[in-house]
Amino acid sequence: MILATTNPPSSDAREAARRLMLLAATGSVALLAGAYTFQAMGYAPCAICYWQRWPHMLAALLGIVAIFRPARLVAAAGGLAAAATGGIGVYHTGVERGWWAGPSSCTGGGSLSGLSGADLLATDIAGRVVMCDQAAWTFAGLSMASWNAVFSFALAALWVLAARRAA
Image (cartoon, rainbow, N blue to C red):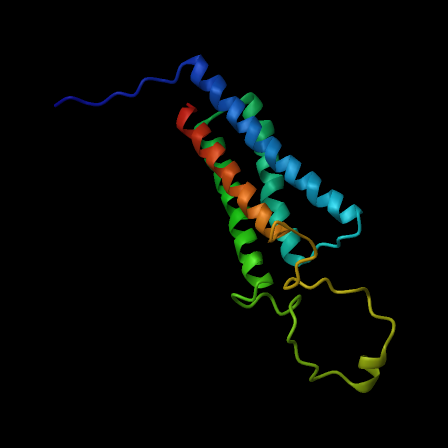
């Protein structure tokens, strides 16, 4: 019986993995910077928009870890984070396009039952609710959520490639 042995990756392979992880993490940082720039320009994010940011933050942190330890586990976690935000972006796109229902807290069609006349006329509400089912900005027919999904899945592919090369 011959046992298969795996040779540890060369230092060149580890360095290539590190560079791919840093490139992917930088992509997440760039997408976060874009999201915050749009927010500063007056495009208020909805609840699902915020959900999409958390995995990018994790991917950015994993990029810092990759500087010191470009391990396969770090790359796999980065790939999962990028794929997760891509999945949330697809979900958000579906909500915007009416393919499926979104959270009742930020989509139209809610009921006014349970509200009194005074509630309906009140002017002291905490703030404007940003609707998740309305795209605030589009480019080439795709919303910010759609573009996030496209770029996030590309970043996930970089993380997977890095995992294949990492130790």
